Amino acid sequence: MGKKYQSLTPSLIDFIEDQHLFFVATAMAEGTINLSPKGMDAFRVIDPAKIIWLNLTGSGNETATHLQHTPRMTIMFCAFEGKPVILRLYGKAKVFHPRDEEYQQYLSHFPETPGSRQIIEMEIELVQTSCGMAVPLMQFREDRTLLVDWAKNKGESGLQEYLKNKNQTSLDGHETGIFETKK
Image (cartoon, rainbow, N blue to C red; front, side, top):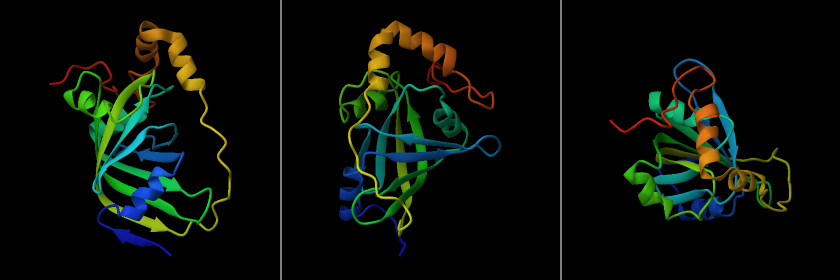
């Protein structure tokens, strides 16, 4: 059954590297909770207590908004193939935009991906596994290319316009900081 760890073990890192999907949850003290599925080649373990993931342009920008106010974040992986397991990472996270030095430093960890808008860094405070015995078995076929194709078709100026129109304000009306200069 479930176990708790202070950081990732080598076997848990191997498990993460085999996954095609993860879920990210954030929330401010009040307002809408955000829970988002993430895919593609967008997650990296930096060390047993630190991860990063590449956040791609989407219809909203809730994670970045929430983390400006409350740095709590939970990441969850589920085994849909093989041995059942659910893995949760709890910690404090920061958002880095293309204008930030940290974004530029971390970007080399990922393949070039059109529509990349932020890199999220999380310092892990708690790792928890649970059984996952009720999670269905599903077979991975392939990553969808729709988001990358959409971003390529938009081009850089089209993406910037989309971010201005769709990514500056959260569902609850808070500024996302996507165009804010670092203070």
